[in-house]
Length: 394
Image: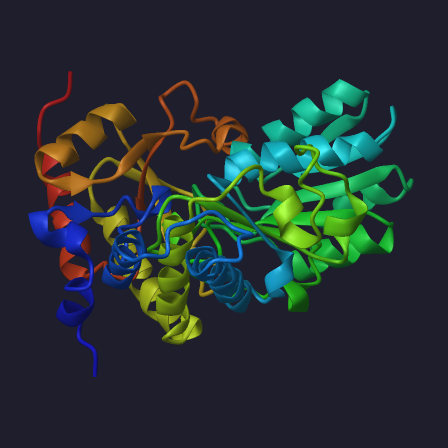
């Protein structure tokens, strides 16, 4: 049986003794990911793709393996997986290509729940062609999102795409994706789900959900910095990307601008295999238990206010809070002095921070549970905040 210490030993980045609760912004790479990158770079394989010699074919096998591994993680087919340097980069390229099919008066629906990488690219692409963007609003108290109002926004048949978070990168709230997909498709719209904060924590199957596009970031699930889209329902063939003229390939290659960092793809394969080596549902249950321990503990610390929904098994294990009399940056700095890593600000969930009325006070402090988080990590954060609450303000 694998113990917590056994698991933590697989993350070299934990060797400095810091408490790492910064996982929602990026996790530490697992040992097999680090090894896979190094092994590829040391091998005779590094070469560009498409050649008839052994090294090029070996590199092609690495790329194919990465597509298959990510497809297995997110419930897609290997030839539906597109890689890029980041999810944000892919979203700007994808929405720009989509907008070539839009007309003035067409509508895109985004949400206040989302990371701005699933809002701003749509807004800019729509602006360039005269389409409009409507924002589905969250509950201003706890930031949860009711998807039923999508019906009113889609009913006239002018909505081309719905862009929605699979789970909030700020509060962890996961909206009803099955219902959102059903509404969008009922009225002829496509739907893109930002799975960046969802895939690391909750079972996610693009085919079963029926989504048209799902995004994910390997560095949120113990891999290297990169982004990936699962582009389904023949969309890779239907939409013409911006590309160099010789890149008239079939499938995802025509969407990948230039040669990918093949060593990074080797690391992605290892990280995806790590993710699927255990039950994601079982890991989610453990993370939910730790989240409950953290969130309940925060409620007991004087001056701390938790923002967001209650703990449930169907949300990502991320929590945000503020401390009375102190800015989020001040709290972040104090925690760093105690060797505890968190994040502060809006964390790119700009619309959500505004909807919750937290912009003027500097946003929030964010902490997240990941696979290498322990009860001791949670206790360290709570102890540090209790210490801070006893200090004079001003």
